[in-house]
Length: 257
Image 1 (cartoon, rainbow, N blue to C red):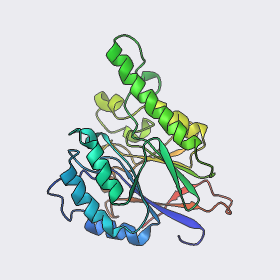
Image 2 (image 1 turned 30 degrees about the vertical axis):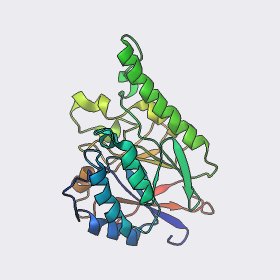
Image 3 (image 1 turned 120 degrees about the horizontal axis):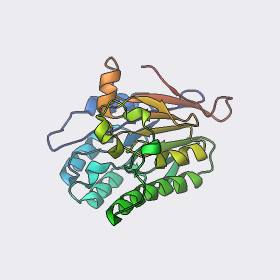
Image 4 (image 1 turned 90 degrees about the vertical axis):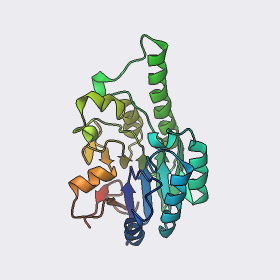
């Protein structure tokens, strides 16, 4: 910690492959020197393979900080997500899935999330059973996020997702795929519990920042988004959240490198 502030580094969509040895070693070392907590918002690996995960786990060893993560859709590609989870947990990564943890007085709640669209264009559970099942999955993920937030007793709350909870941070992607990048149903718990900040990935061509309708800051920390929008900085976002004894304890401020 720096004074009365907790430094939170956030990143997503690492997409580690079998050939990714050493790709982000320097970045992880830089994060370890400049942050107190590291958040990884899904798609840690590319094909959801244990071999990819082993490589990432070894390289994360340099980060002697709490590492908190949620899975993304890519972790499910090979149907080996349980093996992927096991490797990450054994490496010390705190995986959240409708669960929560507290570090430095800040509550972290996480869920993968799911698709479904935004606002009045959201998919509704009507018609074929397959459509109803699709929407049911989105609702289930939203309820998991709400349950995780409700379990925390600290006044400062941070949410991790893979899918986006608002449309603003996926703008820039082809309009045809926007409904598959997130869902407004994931926004509802963020507003209800007064979350300090929310982080997600998944939208590689999206925007780096947005806000919920109640003003909660939402950050898209997909690696490609960071590389494009902050070309002169290491590709992660660094935020400071003030301690509870400061008057602005609920504000997550981006920290310039």
